[in-house]
Image (cartoon, rainbow, N blue to C red):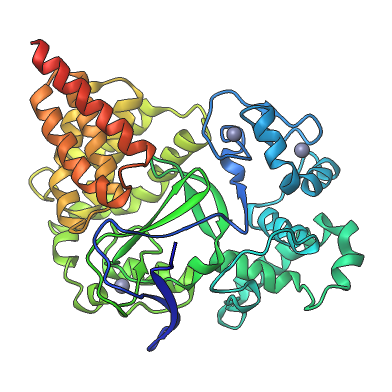
Length: 433
Ligand SMILES: [Zn+2]
Ligand SMILES: [Zn+2]
Ligand SMILES: [Zn+2]
């Protein structure tokens, strides 16, 4: 397949990618396997370390007891990437290095025995490490990580020293932390981290023209709007349900640049995101980091979290703001999302649906272009409507989700197939009534 994109120098931003030809919304622009990847530590017990499927029961690597696989086939396929790592995991047991250390080690092991030559637009050597932009605190954290990495790859030290160009663990780790992508599942929950070198060329925009999705660990880049030849391709590095100041702080802190995109310059969505009485929404804003952390623990770690407690906290926060803070306030929206998730986990379907419906208008406003997060929210609501027998509404919501997903996921994605199946079920039940 001829590449629809090319590398270029983006004025004011350095390297970037741009379209080589006219592109339609929904066009698949690039698909890639990672140069290296690993399942995130925090979900390592629930995700296959080879194909990245989420499963309830997985086989455990009998040596390190850390890696897990769907079956023997997956284990065999994952062995070449795991072989060296397995030995070190055994020696470090019960400690497990952080995700970035494990990913960096996998890259080093890969460099020591290069197998296939992949055609990348951007090589690892060229990747930015941003070492000089880092705060002292970050540098300290990095050198600590690098001492763990050195320990982790100790027996390879001799080979590493002889490598040209030389491998510098600190700079490699910095590159990994600045350039790795979070690999997420169909529900957009984190399952791993990976390095996809060419994709590191993509610059950020708070209203991007492309989205990145994963099928297993295969990355797919799709256009979500029509793009003209020579127009720069962009993705969003961060979640967009944040007002301008918070987006800018996060981008500077994590990616070392000040965003100057149109959405940041005009701050167009801020009045809507921050609507309502400030004294009334401040407690919501302040409670969110802790509450969202609780949710992550429950969703990703399969930790027994107290959904009842989370729901109670959310409803206690939400009740007094009624009237003072509109639904579209971004903190109210995020707390409502947490309440929705808690209700689903507690099988309180009617209440879940009420919370879900409350969020849809805001999702529509904050995602003017097709976006996976919007489609997933619609699907969540549609499933509740379907389950509760509101068939016509369910069908309507599913169709809205489909209109987004045919662009963001494409018709061949497994989630799109799930959605089409749900639509058929709905139709059949309506005909039966
Ligand atoms: Zn598998
Ligand atoms: Zn192992
Ligand atoms: Zn921006």
